Amino acid sequence: MKMAGSKNGQTTPSPTLISKGCVVHGRIESDVFVRIDGHIKGDLIIGEGLIIGENGIIEGNIKAREIVVYGTVNGSVKADSIDIKSSGNILGELHTNSLQVETGATYIGNVTMDKVQAKKESTAILK
Image (tube, helix red, strand yellow):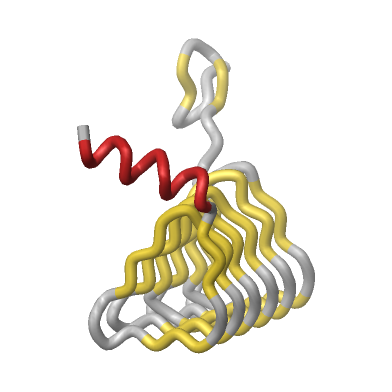
């Protein structure tokens, strides 16, 4: 039997959504894309991308491939790419290769960027 979202009889993973009004206590680990519109009190380890919606609140540390923040994070963030939108707020340390901050966003903390990656990007721009 083929399941919805399957290719050649194999299921494809569905993204994870934590809805507004939902409060989760504890660590969340996922290999797939995750969107948070609720309140997480714990650490997140996400293999793919993470979106924190405008109503999303994270009280914990985050490790993801890429993260887009429309909501609030209180904790350290480690990702290849971090994008803080105008409604986004982060209080904590950032460790990343790429950082984008829109006008109106709030960030309080320290930023550490990978110099090797930054050097590769600047060399590519010069070519």
